[in-house]
Length: 428
Image 1 (cartoon, helix red, strand yellow):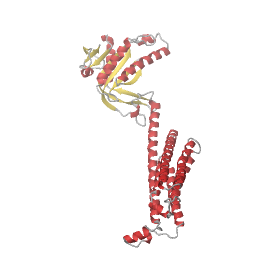
Image 2 (spheres, helix red, strand yellow; image 1 turned 120 degrees about the horizontal axis):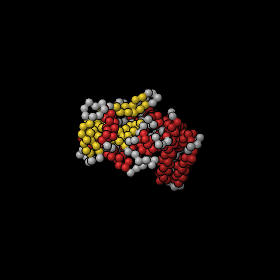
Image 3 (cartoon, one colour; image 1 turned 135 degrees about the vertical axis):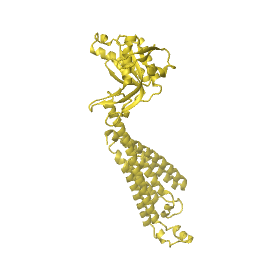
Image 4 (tube, helix red, strand yellow; image 1 turned 90 degrees about the vertical axis):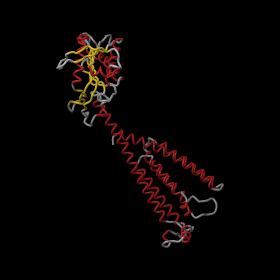
């Protein structure tokens, strides 16, 4: 078990034990008032005060939280509770009046108090503690039965009934003051043992669920640490255990942006100034893209490429990409980066792309492949010839033509590695 798993379980056990103590205090306190009403004065007051003191005494166990005695106190706590129930069965009189045989206590619900004690132990999320508590309850019931039997002059059990007993036989044996019903006591012990075993198995199952969730969270964080600096954060949850993303083929809109004239700007700056300038620029660009539901795929040099609807689904991805481009260009009109006014050229293309992680075991890269990616880069470069800031392909325009104003056609243009001309549209 990892250290974080141990800490999480220890914290859960501590909170569960605290809850068990509070619940026990309330339950025993309520029982004290039942005794107050069930017995005659002044005997009822004595039992009420004793029971109330026992209820409040459990709160002292809370002071051991976080100490070396914490775990031992839990075992002692449930041992004492099982002993308390056993004492009530063996010694607490059934009435404050005439002397009533103590064996008749088994006609009451006192033995059911054991189930309350076992249930409280479940809250600690400790299978061992549940088994210990159940064992103490079974032993307590056995000792109580033996103690009561030892004080009886004669004992009647179900074995004293004839085969196929009549109503008179049942009245004569079962309702006799000397009836103990040892068989029923043994059956109750077996039921207590079965309930304890089932509860311990359930607690163990709950612990395994908790540990599995902790393990999954640790793996997620480990993957985040390994790949967070190389892959978009939104992609990491979908990575396989080996760090690879399952290859995908889907329709997406790609946005490719590059800084115009950055070479001449960088020649006048120190290396650290160039890095700071690009970081400020990319921070702004990333924010605009993310706000529109896009995903920054990668940065290289002074360029950035973003995807909409890949790998994360996004409705109306063409619209989101064009609006992100408009947001970026609008922000550039009124912004400076390290006292420099910058201009971006943007290309937007819509079509099928292949998505996945590539690289070696030492380093992976998340990327997009396909003609759509190349087209967005060609359109970005075409801005130089057309004197525009943002160009898009026909597929993108068709999807947004009725939603975005300020788009004009520039006709067909020949692009590198394209056999036929491509219809191009400019975003004003």
